[in-house]
Amino acid sequence: MRDLSFIIIFFIFVLSSILIIITLNYSYDPMNVYGHTHIYVKSKFHRFVNLGIFRQEKFSMAIFGTSTTENFHVEKIKEKYGIDTIKLSMNGATAFELNKAMNFF
Image (cartoon, rainbow, N blue to C red; front, side):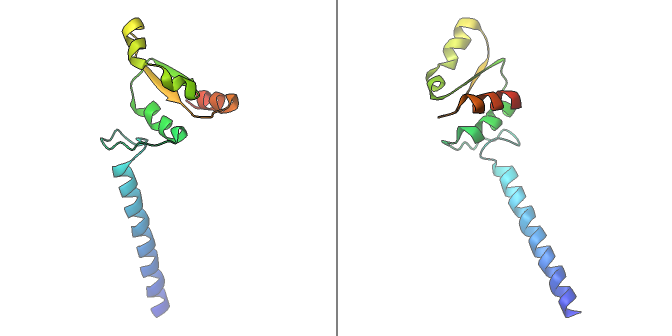
């Protein structure tokens, strides 16, 4: 009986720990994957942040590219053409990675 109570307490502890971690990740959500939060994390990992940007922002056109596209001014595109645009740049990306990202989105 004592072994059974230990196993039950252990599983309750593990499940509650997992639930706390999931709740904190969902509420904090640094990459804006699950929802739009007002907590922004400056990250150099564009491959992770792009998914949150793609899911949460409203846009008509997306600019995919490497570090060269980081110098594009989205405001000027909107001003000249009237198109809501987002930038999804990935530093050091190969053509294969960009193709895979475009097909995913």
